[in-house]
Image (tube, rainbow, N blue to C red):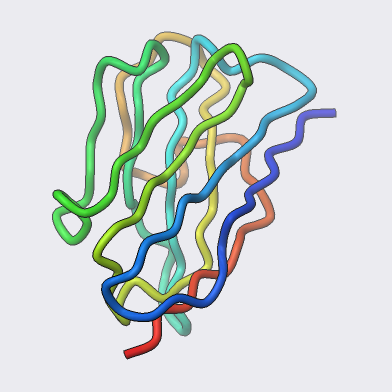
Amino acid sequence: QVQLVESGGGLVQAGGSLRLSCAASGRTFSKNIMGWFRQPPGKEREFVAAISWGGSSTVYADSVKGRFTISRDNAKNTVYLQMNSLKPEDTAVYFCGAEATPYTNIHRLPSLYEYWGQGTQVTVSS
């Protein structure tokens, strides 16, 4: 059974930092795109960042570029999201996603990610 489990969310003041982790089990994702998405209250799920299977390529949403960094450790089957200079508008449930097909290009569409975690809440107070 494949599972993605996010952790590291919480309540932080504006300007603060958090580091999210997403640990995968049940299969290896070392050859697969992994990404982070978020869903603000009352809104659709939106793309945040994604990383290539080898970690050499990353893509970010404009709203987080320069503040967030995605990385992965394939030996641990884990992907991370370092979030700095957090803003109240970053408040959302953050989800980790993984593609089932290996060696694909990075995608921003949630529908192209086959595996999802349960999400972790990030709340940024002003």
